[in-house]
Amino acid sequence: MTRERPELMDLTEHLFELDVYRSRGGYDAARKALGMPPVAVLAEVRDADLKGRGGAGFPAGVKWGFIPRDGEKPVYLCVNADEGEPGAFKDRWLMTHDPHLLLEGIIITAYAVGAHDGFIYVRGEYEAAALRLDRAIDEARAAGFLGEGIFGTKFGLEVMVHRGAGAYICGEETALLESLEGKRGEPRLKPPFPASVGLFRCPTIINNVETVSNVPRILRDGAEAFRELGRPGDGGTRLFSVSGAVVKPGLYEVPVGAPMKDLIFQHAGGLPPGRTLKAVIPGGLSAPVLRADEIDLPLDGDSLFRAGSMIGAGAVIVIDDGTSMLDILGIMTRFYAHESCGQCTPCRIGTSWMHKTFTRLASGNGNMEDIDEIARVASAIKGRSLCPLGDAAALPILALVTKFRTDLGSRVEEARVRSGSW
Amino acid sequence: MSHGFAPVVLDEVRAVAARYPRREAALLPVLRVLQRVSGALGRAEEELAAELLGLEPVRVREAVTFYSLFRQKPAGRHIIQVCINLSCSMAGAGRSLAGLQTRLGIGPGETTSDGRFTLLTVECLGNCDRAPCLMVDEDDHGRVQEEQLDEILRRYP
Image 1: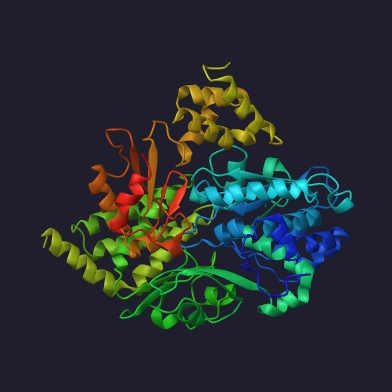
Image 2: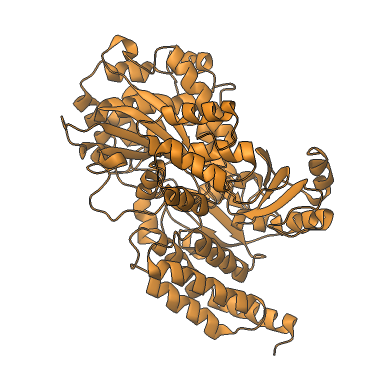
């Protein structure tokens, strides 16, 4: 029996147990893959147009193809489970409810790229998810799905959970590698890319939890079926974490390219009674905000990029008319000042500078020139750091102050009135 | 070599280190174990980790000071982490934080005088569909209303 459903999310109870997972057809795809030549497995995933679900959106199969064949160094597989983008909780769900799906994806991915060691880098706060994964790994090993001679083949694989210790930056792939090597999570300069120089300077594949969890069904149903679920060049379905001002916050799966309005107003039940839509942050806090009149968009990476934002990790935060954009600006400046790793000066100094300026504004001792100052500093950070965190701080702040200047202005005045500093 | 640590701790640390293809990769999990055992990462913990993993002590200090879940001073018996990022703030995280401050008589970053609770604010805990959320030790609490705070606190003596 196979999973007779096109969805990634399977709501079967106790799916985290091996027996239940197997009763849903679990590990059949891995068995099938290990009976194929690795290059054929890689080709199937490449042809599926599976784009990375972690934020950067790079096609997984193309990335796998960068691993040198028959090199002398070992190849490592790292699963990025450091989900830290504010608003995102999809990977947590996958690991907690369907850990064997991730393991099955890991087996297939490792086989395709020739890796025999896999690490799942789970953020420090995800205790329950890490425990489920540990248990699933033990079960899989006992069943002969991990370890030596998987499914009677010569292929062997060891997988272990590695816990982060509280650092948003470690979701960036090269910072994750540094962290996994026992260092501070400071991103590396690219190139070289991890596929050629990665963990312990060996070729390394780093894929997000949701990306890897999609691999089994590509092998099961074929590349074409997966591709047809989505859009040209961007196959499959995507998980969206919807939070903020909606009636039913939660995790929803829709085909790539489904209308954003359907996600918000149908799946998530729209805004609570009496509230109206003011803005949407479509891809987590780092994604530039969209005004209410800008959300008539299909949910795919290209469409959101053309709209000046990004799909990121699929974290949709819905903002209602009662929310102060000045408060949001403060959360953004604080977050990036806290999470900048400090390696590149524009990001380190710039993010703190923006937050100090905001703090002055919020205390009532500022004016619109401070908003302009924040925008100037954001522009100065943009494009001047070696990892995406600098841009992740600059772009959403620039979008917020550009699109909601009037709103910010009235809140700045309110703060001045409250503090008595006319 | 033992730095005064019990043999059972040394065994656990060595077992963790042995799981990795290279010893230095075990630094974060080793520090996790030592922090759990000792309550904080002081000089003795840093030196033990450095010695067992063959690292310069400064490498260990660099890691200890980089990651927010590592602490150099002991915390209370229970650690409360209140998420104050966007989705939780919109759902009333400010009220739960203020409610906790009133009940505990401390601000974020502080520990109650009886050593029972340390109160911390954190960025997104990845529980946004259950906003506002907080963690006490390893437990998740979602959709926290102010009137539930007493009941939550009671569970952690």
